[in-house]
Image (cartoon, protein in one colour):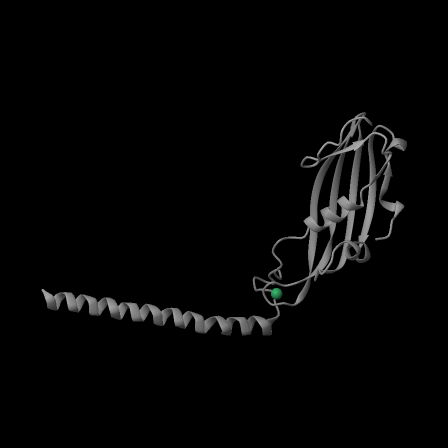
Length: 186
Ligand SMILES: [Zn+2]
């Protein structure tokens, strides 16, 4: 992985209060960090609001972008929107403090670490912005999926329904026979 100064924040040089940053994340940035992923053409812009307090920093990340994913229903690639926001608190610890385990959304760094590399979080937040469900959005109230694949899927699902029906029919018959038998024994 290439080391880039681009994603480093030298917090000591920042004025107390809010500073804003903007990062453009491209396919190369994501591909260097993610392996064997079928997602492609990552494009994301992350707005970072960095609020510098004396002993801690409050970071707010706004992710906006898109990525090409294969549709879970028809298999065709389509562009899905990335849109989410995340908060992170960085607490400064004294140099002699023992390493403190990071909590959820709270990161501890020694005060002596004057440069913070945020590329790890940029990557994580872009990944977390991908919606869990990858299905073509509807177009005019109809599935936006590949019509050929959709047709085929519909055809494949039909015999399954018929099979289900015949099982029920068999059971109905059995039920009927059971009744008749009972009546006979009486
Ligand atoms: Zn689809």
